[in-house]
Amino acid sequence: MILLLVFTIDNNITIKASSLEVIPGGETIGIKLNTGVYVAGKYSVETINGKKNPWQKADIEIGDKILEIDKKKINNNDELIKQIESSKDYELVLTIGRGSIEFDTNIELVENKQGERSIGLYLKDKLLGVGTLTFIDPETKNFGALGHGIIDQKVLIGGISGSLLVSNVDSIKKASPGVPGEKRATLSNSVIGNLESNYATGLFGNISSRSLLNKDKIEVGTQDDIKIGPATIRTVLNGKEVKEYDIEIIEVNKQNTRNVKGIKIKVTDDELIEACGGIVQGMSGSPIIQNNKLVGAVSHVTIDDPLIGYGIHIEWMLEDCK
Image (tube, rainbow, N blue to C red; front, side):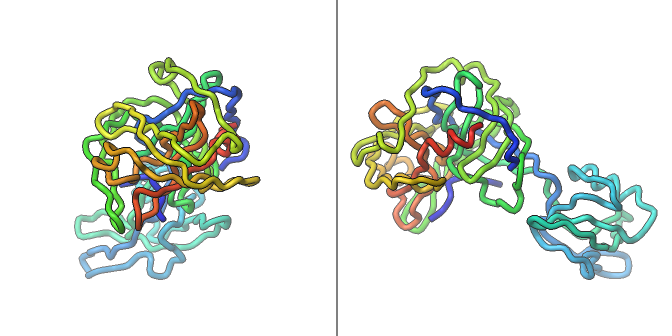
């Protein structure tokens, strides 16, 4: 079983789905998240005295977040580089965030053959990805997307900041049993919304695009409204065109607490099967509609059978959109 987001919480966030009708999504969206500075890897630095590993005696693991250097807050890679270049010492104190704990560790600062300072760490301060918009609350302009949290929960803990971007689906890598497919899409620099929170149920924020807000609304369905039988999903297979595709709801799990696998579905649409082989990565968040009601969003695919997948009950996304 795999999540369906393609990538290269703060409980005080106040997003609210206030109506019983929402604007259904289906648009492929680009996601740009500002994450802070995280350790993505380690490498040996080539110096005039041979290879050195500045991190060798430091307590640093891949996935750690660098919060401060010498007690100065670091928000992105540019700030980190400036701090390293301005340091007068050849040992730095890094304040590290690892899960729920913070601690200090010392790391050596060396110069490579070009005279550039380095701590021998591959670092990242943002994530880029592609997913699917699920719904927009027309009254608050708040949205929900993806139907599950970001894969690397170690990276995204608490409230987040970032942008929702226009995305264009260029091609599809077709799925087959044991081989996940994916949407291959390009991201533009056109911002259509802001990202504000990441929960297990999805990404949430505020829409600024007028074209997305000027669309027809649909009634929201409850778990009791969902029946075994025909339904549809809304998604994009080419360019920016949102279309509805036939599926079958084959199992409904009634839930009292949040879980991203409340609806089991099977793809039955010939066009979708021909183009994708079933459910592919990048479809996460695709709205599930039955009897003209939004009842859920695609969240997972069964990797051994891409025709079979799961969806989250829409009420869990709506509850977290507040």
